[in-house]
Image 1 (cartoon, rainbow, N blue to C red):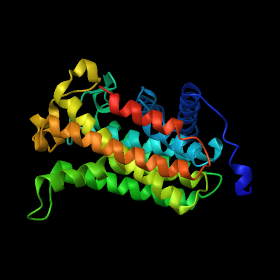
Image 2: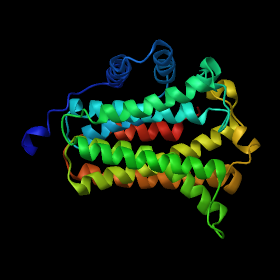
Image 3: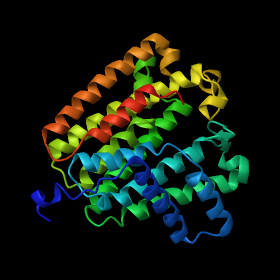
Image 4: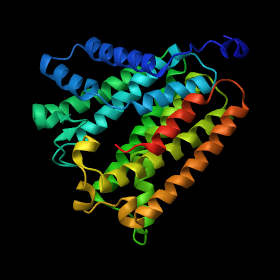
Length: 300
């Protein structure tokens, strides 16, 4: 399809319809996999038990901003959320964060046991790449971006959990690396995948990626602030655990006021990136701007 013809084909969908499309696609992906009953139940609990769906919605809105077609982004969006779900299942395990509550519900290992939780996470990881490979075009580029971001996320989690930084690396440098990879990698990936799905040029994909990176770091810092300042009931997950575990967080390293100042700096960087995206004049950035606004104001 010619570039000029593709600019107007993305259907206008409100947030609720985007979420319904995503939920349907996630449920279908698990059903098509034909897992054994216990594995399917654990995967559905991990994936369909609620959640903000920030990353796939970010991907859809990046596709919109780049003038692409929603249907071209659906397999990538499903794959990205499955990767996120896999990471949460494994992060919650006793060997890592040992969390018993996720999204106000029992975590997978709390409900089904550790063995099935490990296997469910493995299954979701494999299922994610199977879905990305089914993209109607640019499947190779989507797979490369998704696999690179997944490896970065895992590496960030490894260093966050086990350490291993080079001698002389400051606490601030360690913190920035962990957050840029553990959380920021999938946010950057979401916006890059949106550009790839829209068949955008490299300048536009870079601008989208800059927005995603800034948003991801901001999301993690706000998460750190919530962990320090909110109750478990309000957050929908255990809070105060990072400080108790001796983990590096922005409030621990820099304090709450400096953490909030960094959120402000990243917000400005993200808005500048959105201006670059808008300058290509291919689609609406309203959805991305709304995601940024909600991220800044979130309390759980």
